[in-house]
Image (cartoon, rainbow, N blue to C red):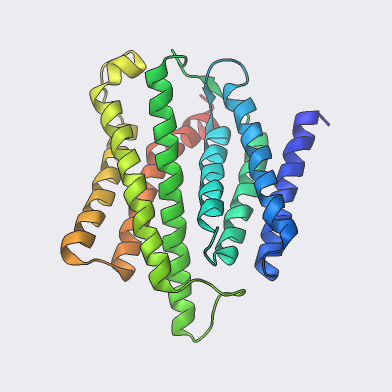
Length: 261
């Protein structure tokens, strides 16, 4: 077994243990410092995979892992001072799976001219947008589950924040994610030749990204002018993030995993 694979398995196991502990018991001191350790080790694995050869190398495995690492990191930061342990346990479980998937889907491709500062800034903003909107999508799913459990007279094991607290966090997260997505989409559309060395082409990736931007923008406008909340907001959030997944990760999955290109 290679040292890198051994480290990967250890990081995944550490995430899994933290997820199990958060799901079954109140957060302990050991969990509070083991989760940042898992995040740090996961980030080091991503750095090695994406930047370890000098240029930027992306593929389905390390892209998905990067997005879920940012999601787990955001949730960990948000959980400081908020009762989000049951939700954090699920995010940690997804991060554990993403570490394993990075070891399974190892194919990567170098990004042309990846040392250009503008392109690196575009990629960082794009991944941050994915991370924040992934948090929003998870919030939407968890709020839907919590609402159903409350209607049945049950609660999530270990307790959960009030729905109004989650809703406030949801729209704050969407606001940040939408601002980042706006920068990513508009920089990609209007500065395509400077960033990627070729004129803009309206591929399905661009189309899905723009559709996602329109959905999240429409949701924020509906919230501001019509007071949208509850199930309407949750449906729009999940729809917007699904379109965003299809824009990049869906494309990579089809090309790399199914078509082997």
